[in-house]
Amino acid sequence: MVFLCVDIGGTNTLLGIGNGDFQVIEKYGTEKFLKDVDGKVDEALKDTDYSREQLEKVAVAAAGPIDREEKTFRPPNFSRSGLEKVDLGEAFRDFGKITILNDGTAAVLGEYHYGDHDAENLVYVTISSGIGAGVILEGRVIEAWNGNFGEVGHMKINEEGPECGCGGTAHWEAYSSGENLPEMAEELFSAEYDDALEIFKSYKSYDSTAEKVISKMHEANAIGVTNIANVFNPEKIVFGGAVPLNHTEMILEPLKKEVKEESVNSPPQIELCDLGEKSVIQGLRAVCNGKFKPSQL
Ligand SMILES: [Zn+2]
Image 1 (spheres, rainbow, N blue to C red):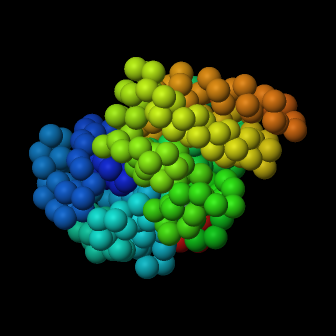
Image 2: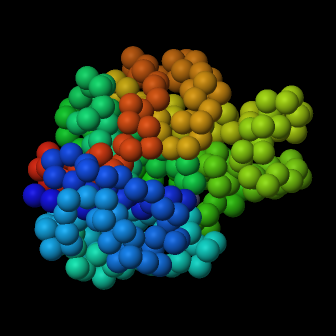
């Protein structure tokens, strides 16, 4: 059963082709990828033993609300680039039967099946362009209505705050996602940074404004993650996405303390994910290998 798995993230898209396991995994910029899906799939196929005709299953994870019936997704964090709705059914029409998953759900599936967690109650949190989550409770994946679940980045942190990519205000990701950090710095501290990387670099060189920005980010992360701990009562919360992958200690250490103090039940372990940037695509592989059948197809 030759499969094509595609993890469409806010910034990058990972594309994997294989049978049982992946033969290749390629990385593209998401905007470029979506403009030339056919070309990129053909390019990746060249590095495998397979042809287009052999592809039977397509699994796609999208960083935004999905519509399984319509086979579309709406990318909230691409709204600034003008991409309103992506028609996945049309984009992948030539490559086999398509299954669409929320990317947080795919990531927790990947970590559960191919990571080394030994936990039946597992939450995956990504902090990258946006913030999202996937949840497995008692070994069961929670998918909810129409496959949309885990938009934890849009939980309200306080009454007033910076504007979120979705149009709301004071949402967790408006404070803490990689894309929103510079805007939060500008709105709350009148500071100008080109991107999140510059904020992290300035923080490491003891820039006092960057310290305030990072402290605000920690505050929002602590609220978001302790809420997740108290709502779902998982054994472990594992973190992925560019921000914790590149700044592991800075992001996770304060959270371990906060979650321990604020958890009503036994505090969950706070860890980095096992599969790095491949959690989502490995979750799609799990779907193609029949380890999980998405609801309402
Ligand atoms: Zn939002």
